[in-house]
Picture 1 (cartoon, rainbow, N blue to C red):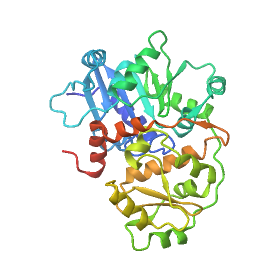
Picture 2 (picture 1 turned 60 degrees about the vertical axis):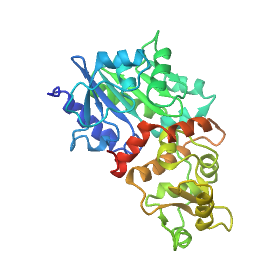
Picture 3 (picture 1 turned 30 degrees about the vertical axis):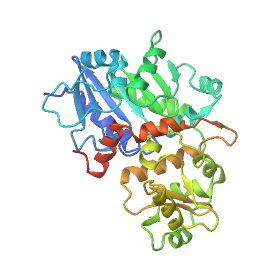
Picture 4 (picture 1 turned 120 degrees about the vertical axis):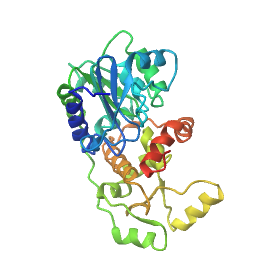
Length: 343
């Protein structure tokens, strides 16, 4: 199937936003282009940052996708039978919006606002002049598309703030959509709290004799050296990719507790090993076999947490939503792609 000429512009935009960790982390985010009844959308598990080097877009039958959405069907009809990748798990969301180009990013400033309760007035002031709407959290995919369909039945916003999730924008061309992403993030900018640097020697001592190591990026350590960030991320999960790649809520070592103690308790409870742990006052440690995408999610978590105002009331994902995400076939597939285990 021959891609439209403008798909190259979408590749370029996708790669630019995909390389910006404040907008996209790992395999998160997705982009799309509508042309002649076909929706070209990012494949599930693909990295936007690689859009210029790899074929990451899947052609979807747009009228068929809209019929599937109306009928409550999550699986989207691929327009090319030779396609080997699955469309993004959020394809129905892209099909729903009337805009020709749609960009969905996990922008850290937007996520911070989207995880706060009672900030609608301040958001409205900052986004004044833009056609925007905020929708409550729903699991990505069909449930999110259904609530967006309800919210946009009478208005057609160009900007959607997705509760506990991220940012969705639509425009008539790639340049306008990319500019809109940056404009929203500029308006929603939140200053990061300063925090002490991580204590690498203390982290290395804690990891000795285990399958863990200190996190590579300094931002990750601020999760444990900033008391407010530590309190936020150990109290619950802020957004879906946090749960899928890092597990529900971060675990911090208690005074005198060892990594081996936590691993033994997890094994006794038949729980999987923790991807990452926090050492209060010292920093973050991760499994030695952590995938790059998961470590990028840890960086994102740090960037979001340090932007949440000190007095903000935080909205966390309910336990049943965390369980649904961990047991969700679409996310298992996306995560398997990141580790090379997808069939």
